[in-house]
Length: 290
Ligand SMILES: C[S@@+](CC[C@H](N)C(=O)[O-])C[C@H]1O[C@@H](n2cnc3c(N)ncnc32)[C@H](O)[C@@H]1O
Image (cartoon, rainbow, N blue to C red; front, side, top):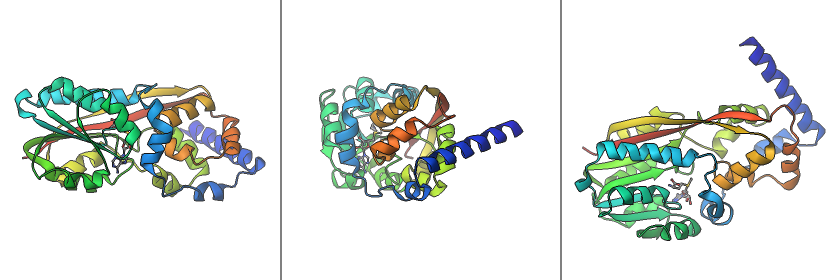
């Protein structure tokens, strides 16, 4: 315990000295997140082409746990209409199509490029829009299954579930897969040495833990029928490997795109950080409308 604290102090001091010596102002770092990042464009231009590589298997691992919940809980005959909120490249919807081949599939997303990739994988009704407008596209209580996979970083999960659950019929299911704030504790710890907690939370908002994710569904009047945590250890040998993963996967793109070339080069030379071992966590929750 004590040794950990001392090692943390050492790393903090080394990092701060490194940033000062390289002329990187902590104030600038703390101030610079652009609150108006256009998420649709970010996915179109920086992520869509590489998103499906899913190099560390974090996205597929979380989705697979959701599919196991569907298999255990949902009857074949009960699913005729499925809506994926933020369908992305269609990976979750493709799996649902395999489980319920007779169902009609619908998917909303802000990124036209992500939708194009999804359209090549399966037949579905693609809607290029914000999930905040989902209810304008469908009558109330018409969906048998709704998905919200890896969207909670971009929206207020509680608000979106409250609103969109009105599209679910009685007896219908709502599935959430969400990275939580507990994911990547080592990366958070390193970030907190140079960035304020507020900056980190605002730049990358995520529900704290599985209880918070489950509360989005219960606050909307749904009953939790299955829940689990997908966890996986990850290791980055150097900054380049971390940067490529962070950019290509979408996990850290919205933060990394805001670094300029000099900052990236300087971060690449940071001492005492790599190889970096960390732990990923995603909450996987299925709920039913009474
Ligand atoms: C991490 S990806 C998840 C995609 C997919 N659900 C999956 O499991 O791979 C996030 C997706 O959410 C979309 N997105 C972000 N905010 C959105 C919003 N407010 N309305 C609609 N789509 C949004 C992005 O364009 C991107 O395709």
